[in-house]
Length: 132
Image 1 (tube, rainbow, N blue to C red):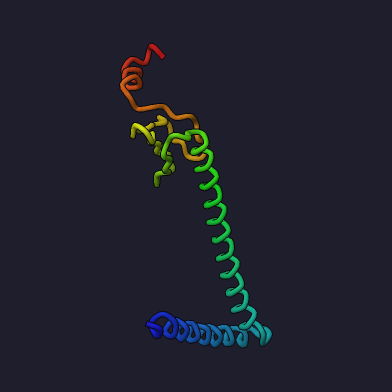
Image 2: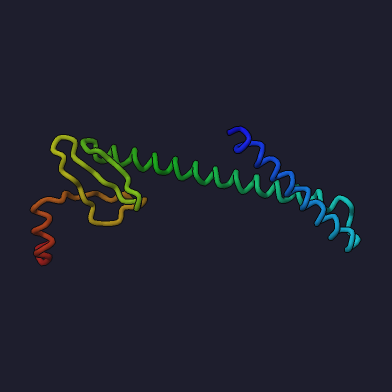
């Protein structure tokens, strides 16, 4: 397991770096570029990979904080409901006492408008839109 998870990827990375170094050294030599060009190019690639990874982690952290804040707002808005965010971004609200489901009728996403219940009165209103 240690061999598969650590040694093999490490050897592959070292072999890739050696091949990249040799290729960049030949290109630098043929164009009369400085000797340090391969090291700078590889260092720049590694640095850009690290920066991209840090930015990806920052985006994920911002998304997590925003989701937690929205969840807290929804729980404060509907204190007697179980609040769950669905994978499509909508909120699923269930009354804790009755188990009745709430349906907002809109794509809530990040705006979180007030929800309405999915009961007989709402169904009647949707069948008779002139009475709204």
